[in-house]
Image (cartoon, rainbow, N blue to C red):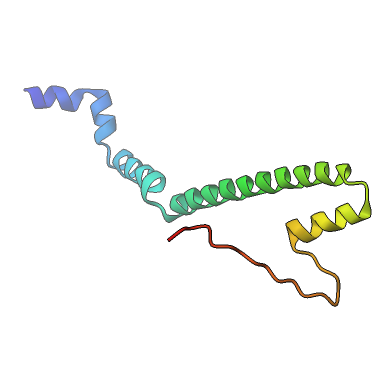
Length: 104
């Protein structure tokens, strides 16, 4: 008796329909288990990291532009380029000396 009432209910008959079940399974598969969804998440993460890198370098460029505008003398500008970016003239060698700051 209860089973007959359930079978006569239009909503339950619609939900038990084999095509609806297959469609629901397909939708769940596409949203949660498909490989393209995982790739999309990885790509979004990579895009976010690249945008962070872009913003970092834009800030660095703006800071350097501020410093360069303050340096009016060519010798000061040359000193800045040598110290910060390790630039050199053609026939020069650069030796970088780093001191160990850890005390034993």
